[in-house]
Image 1 (tube, rainbow, N blue to C red):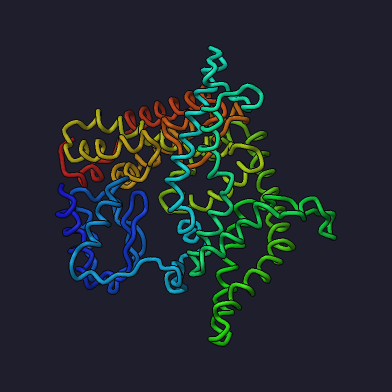
Image 2 (spheres, rainbow, N blue to C red):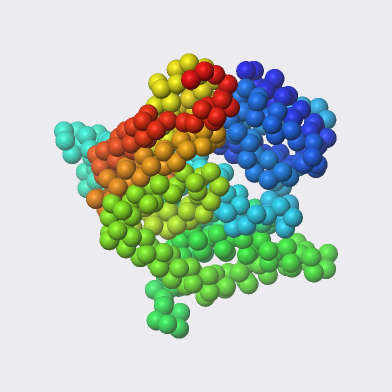
Length: 462
């Protein structure tokens, strides 16, 4: 369907241009805030060809459209006459008391704009790892990963810079975005994240309590989140209570001093203890629970994606990467996508006469194979009820396989599906687990199948 026509239909069933107060999109969803939830016709939206699902609250519906499509439709809507909406501005918070649904929304608003960067930089890192493998097998000088001074390749050195820079300054990016989400100046967030990344000449010095020392990166992205959000709040408080003549200097000065000291002496040590504790607990689960732990983690991930709570895992993954060099949990999570792909393939071949289901599977399958699960979740498995849990069960089998290899994990986030093999510390193990999750999802769905009443929602014969 032409993007403009689809956008017009969606706008009509959202209550028209005058009903839209806020409008934005993430990778797969059109996210809006409406003035009157009573004007939204959810049933009609769900029947629009191209709409894979509608989630969220009545006041803040989210229309599932799939990767690429969500951005295209949002662009079309913004160009339509009569639409009077607001976007995120530097002096306007994305998080409001009236619309906040908790910490998971905060995580989502901070990390969703960074997802494509994680994916792009992570894939580049994976390409570099392939070149390293080629060097190890063939000795090709162009792929020598050693330092240039030690005879390494200039090409590989340049590739290392390109693939690692984002992750080197990740805390700064998170601090900036956290400040922006809270309605503060993102450049103050840069300072907050910068303090986490580099404490300067204080590095190694004693803090004077509990035997702690100042350490670069202590607390990781969790500390950057807290510091970035706090510096925005403090800046706004000072700006609201200082004379107009001092509003250029005092808000930034006060925020830097207050939050900077709080970051060094409170946020970093506290978040450092938290991230270390979380890491130890997760590693204990992976190392001691083995296949059972892997199965539980993998089975649980699709329900987290469905509710949006998976965003809460992002700072945990990043903390693990910063401490260990990889996150063992993300590999288990990636198995969820394999279970979905297997279930979708089974539906495609089992119910050939159901043309609407065939179209839905074809639309979501490519994205699912590449690690983007929402199109298959909201467009295929979730509407079929128990098929969603059959996909989760397939994922559990893949997770159990990974559970036998506790040192396997991803060196970045937002790269999963078949592409996850490029960023895993043990590619062959990942590939085996992913294949098992696909096979499990396929077999469970093939032999158990969907209920007739749920298949009827797609309109078609069995």
